[in-house]
Length: 567
View 1 (cartoon, rainbow, N blue to C red):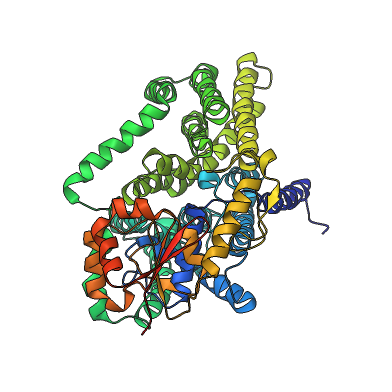
View 2 (view 1 turned 45 degrees about the vertical axis):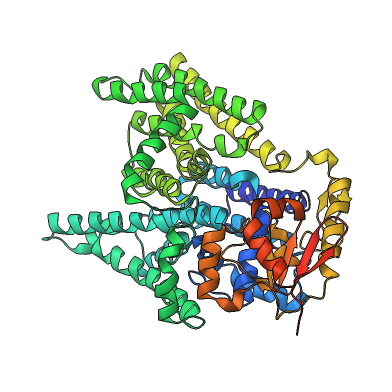
C-alpha cells in the first residue's frame, strides 16, 4: 500500500464506479435478436450440438470461453430464465478484467495506460453488452496486443498467455489467423536478417516469442479439438465443414475478395472523408518538414476539428448504431500524433496500431455488417491512439511550455480526447440497440430468458405472453424445434433442441433440406410461427409438407405452433 501512487487510486476508483454503473445498466433493455442469438449458441452446445457440424455458423466457436460459465448457470438454475442478465454481468466482469490487464501492462506509461484502458472500457460493439463473437474478439485482441507490447522484457509465460488470448480471439474472428501468419513471417525475416545474434535479442519479433505464442495457441487448439471430436466424428466434420463458409451473408468466394478489399477503403472514406483528407495530407507533408514539431498546431487543428465534428455528428445526431461510428475518428488523429512525436516508440505502432487496422479488415471479410464491423474494430486503434495523443501532449508540456502554438496544439489534443470520452460514455449508458429510450424502460420481465430486465410495458407484456404460450406446449427434451421467423429467443424457452443449421432467422429451404438429409434426427417435431399466414406465404412448400404429414396446429395468444402427432 505504501508504494501505491495517485494514479493507482484514480484508476481503481474509475474501475469501481464504471463497473457499478455498467451492472446497473445491464438491467435495462431487451434485445430480442442478436443478444438472444448469442445465448442460443451457448444453449446449442449445452444440448450436445457440435460447432461446424450441427450449426453451420462459424460464430458458434466463439462460445468456447463462455461455455463453462453458462454450463454452471444451467446447473444452478436448471433453465434459461434470466440467462441474458447473467451473460451481461459476465461481460461486465470480462470487460473490467481486460481493462485492468491493459492498465497493468502499460503501467510504466502512467496516464497513457489509463487512457488506453478507459477508451476500451467505454465502448461495446453495437452497445450490446453481452459475451459474443463481437465483444470477445475485441477483448481478446486487446489482451493480445497489450501483453505483446507491454514492458520490454517478457518471460516465456507472457508469450504463452499471449498465444492463448490470440487463439480465443481467432475463435471469434477466424480471419484473424492471418495476423498470426504475418507475425510469423516478420519473426522469421528478423531471424534471417540477424541470424548472427541471439534469437532472443529482438524480443517481441524473435523466434523465441513466436515459439511460445504458438505453444499457447496450440493449447486452445487442443481444447477446441477435444470438444469437437468428443461429440462428432471426422466423417461428419468432413461432410459439413465447407458449408460453414457458404451460408448466406457469410459466403467466402475468393473471386470477390478484391472487391471486398476495395469496399473496405471506400466505406472508411465515405464514413469520415474530411478526416481522411486532413490526416492523410498531414502525414504526406510531415516527412518533408524538418520543423514539424514546431508546426504541429497546423497539422493537428484540421484533424482535431474533424474528429470533434464526426463524434458530435454520429454521436448526437445519428441514431443508426452511433457507438460503432464514434470508435473510428480518434484512430486517425492518433496516427497523425505518432508521426509528430519527437521520440517514437515503434513497438506500439507495429504491435498494436497496425494489427488493429488489419483486425478491422479481417472483421470486414468475416462479416456481412459492412461499415459497422469495420468501425467497431477501430477501437483497437483508437485506444492505443489515445496513448499517442497523450505522449504528444507531454512533449508539448516539456518543450513548448511558453509557446502559444504549443499550448494551442495541447488544447486540440485535450479537446479531442474529452469529446471522445464524453460521447462514448454517454452512448454506453443511453443508447439501446433495437430498444426504446431509457426513460421508457419501466416494466420488468418476470419470465423467460429476459427475466429480470426492464423494458417498455407493452414489450414486457408481449414477451411474457409469448413465453407463456411456448411453455404451455407439451414439449420435452426429446423434441426438435424449428422457429419460422427471426425469433431466436424462442429456442431458449423450451427444452427442445434446435432443428436447423442456424438459430438466426428462418432457414432457407434448399439448404435446410440438405441439412435434414444429413441429420434426419433433426427433423422438427415442433414448428413455432409468430405469424402462420406469413410463414405459409414465404415458405409454402416447406409448410405444406409439414401440414400434410399430420402436424397439429395449435393457436396461441399471439402465435401458432405445429406439433407432430406422437405415435
